Length: 189
Ligand SMILES: [Zn+2]
Image 1 (cartoon, protein in one colour):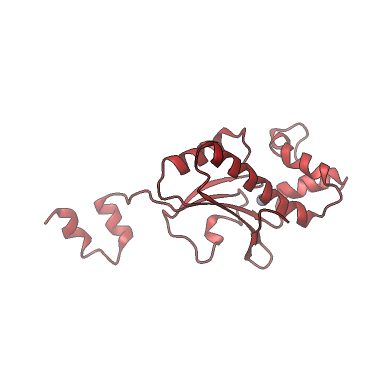
Image 2 (cartoon, protein in one colour):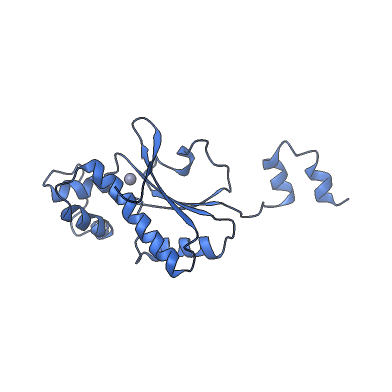
């Protein structure tokens, strides 16, 4: 019997302690989570919360997946080509998103509290969403919030096709921070 086996048996009910002794667990997440940096919407808002090791994560302002973003594209590329256990990409937006709100407000001439610095990289980051908001000025903030999820789903699907992994599921969700519920966002209206 190896030392590891000797140690793992009495520590079976204390995996955290056992892990500290016998080494790290394998990296076998099943979900790639694309969410907002907003501190209120980490992947642990999912119910039931995923365990440590279940979710591979990309979070940024307004849960974007832009084809020119080398960070997000690298996460997706490694996620679906380097981690065989990932079966789903989950794009999760949320109500009360300051990034979406800023885009909505600026195209509708509504003051933004607080406004992003003019000509900042933050406005560059939000450029694609702002352009989409501008092209759909007649729509509501609620529509733009969901549409932002749909846009990223389309972008992820296009990248998955180019990576030869169109078999990976892409699902969209909206987390309502008011009632703390998560709703599916279909790919189209
Ligand atoms: Zn947000």
